[in-house]
Length: 411
Ligand code: CAP
Ligand code: MG
Image (cartoon, rainbow, N blue to C red):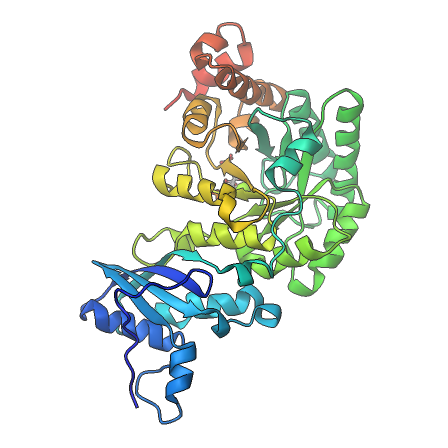
């Protein structure tokens, strides 16, 4: 028995359905392609099946509720989801699973998703969020300004801790491990965490508050243990590579009451999903899931300004998802990182606003005067823009910024 998954023109209650927006490229009529998607992801398969009773189809079938050129909206009933046990892995199996490989669809991109309250309530959201991070740093208004310790790999714990100290002396509020550093022989995680904690304590005793995110990305069965260990060694923030570890890793840390430090969420590998404008998963659903799972700070792109592929409008959508008040979680601190340097800070703040964490690795470590002066250049750029002063004007009285502007220019 075959049923139609087309419910065009019907309204789906956002508190009863998970509603997904897909961009579809197909040679088939769009209705057919959309139906094959809704069937595969809910109660159907490639042919009619004798075991699909009408009431099962009516209760659990996905509904194609809108088709607007190549944009298709599909509503999946809340009962299709197994939140307590299945969590995000099972959510993704429905909204972003087999559909990517269907023959009937050449290309398909999950552009957006909304979750009913009943599902949202099963997730923790951030423990600290943007305001919690600001409280820790005693920085209520200005953009947070950070660095990624460079080179990505190779520095010893002592050199890494020294880099962090110099960054703090240059005025930075945040620093972090790079995504490829965890516990290599040249920089064991325990030694690094202890040495960095000493730097941060020293900075605090000298009147400057700063946090550093220790990358604890690891296998699922180890992440809580490593998270708790680095905290006991003095970590003030932890970092997780969310797409390589899985959303569930972030959720596990956010739900673990013994973890009492914010989680910085890096999105390494996202380009494999987000970069093709017609195929994959846009950053927006990824950002929403990271917030649901409890990330406190999240890489959202540089609004088309930095070294990584990105776009002003879609990166701004990611930022808006960090703050959207309707979902009921604390706000996430959006992180703009990747090819950032002092000369672009004005453009980033203009596009993103002041509630943002701006980060530069090369844009700090590449300064001819060294890390401290590189950090000063970045902090001065943020201070200038926050105070409404033109970067070049501010540079007349701030040498480190002047050198950075001369070296890298602006955009
Ligand atoms: C930035 C960075 C980040 C990118 C990732 C890097 O360093 O540490 O991983 O920001 O981009 O290694 O490239 P630089 P995204 O400041 O030296 O560029 O957040 O877009 O995933
Ligand atoms: Mg990096």
